[in-house]
Structures are given as C-alpha cells and as structure tokens.
Length: 197
Image (cartoon, rainbow, N blue to C red):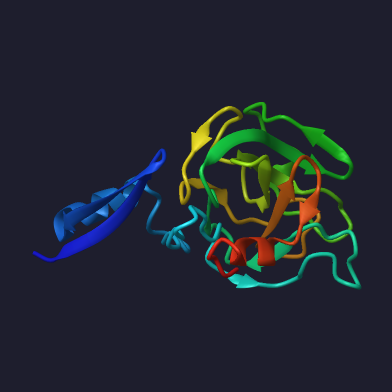
C-alpha cells in the first residue's frame, strides 16, 4: 500500500497525516474531493488557497467594467468552491435583479441560471477572516452549503460553481474586501499571500 501525505489545518495548528491508499479516499470524500474540480488547491504558508480550480477571466475594475469588484474564475458548472482561508460565514443570500433574500429552504430565484443584465450576485456567501478581511463567492449553482455563523477552514467546500444572477456562463466571481466594503483587487491580494489565481 502506498502512502499519501495530507496537510490538515485545525485552528492555528497544522498537522501532517500519513495515509494509506485505503484511507485516502475516505479523507478525500470528507473534504469534498472528487466530482467536477473537486481537488483542493494547496494551502499556502499564510493560510490562503485558491477558492476554485479554474482559469482567471474578467479582472478587477477593468476599463470596460469599472464597477466589477472582483475577478471571475472560469470553471465548469458544479466545480467545488472552497473557503480561501479560515473564517466565519457572515452572509448567505440570493441576489438577483436588485432584490436580495435570505435562504428559506423553498425554491428561490437564484436556483436557475441567470443572464447578462439581470443584475446581482446570484447565490453567494461572504466569509470574514482575520484582520477584518471579507471574501465573497458569487454565482453559485445552488444555495451555499454553509450557514451564517459557521466557522470554516481554508479549503473547506462551501458551494459549487454556477451561473446564477448577472452571469453569462459558469464561473466564480471572487471578491476581497478589506475593512468593511472596501473592495481590493483579489489577484495581488492573493499573490501577496502565496496564491496565484
């Protein structure tokens, strides 16, 4: 039997587990491995990781989209979206056409694909991290799998890529806010933390 090394973050501590090939599949399924883009990106020494496996597309506040407060990461519908760092979920909402709702368990307008011009982030979640940094994950295919007040760790699955809200196709719209609603470019922010988007 082969061995697989797996880094697991537990609070501020980090442990290295040596797994046999027989147990690696169990751990993979617990941490959301498998499926479309299910593999987790490595967590950097700073505690940050790519939120989704995909290709960076539309950038932050470009000349043709000055109000675009994040970066779009193209990925197939259903690809696992993961918390970019440890934190607490502070918002889970459905946002389309200028309206916004908390999840009710009933069918919601965000449960279907959106289109350009519809407006809104679709299904999204916000996570507050150390230093009053908030990461936002938009256009999920369904309601995020996390709830407000839940503590998450870097790399933990929080939802799946979709195209809800103001969207022209499956992708993750990823934002970083420093100190409240101050959006900053996620590309250099993540690069400074050892992560290439």
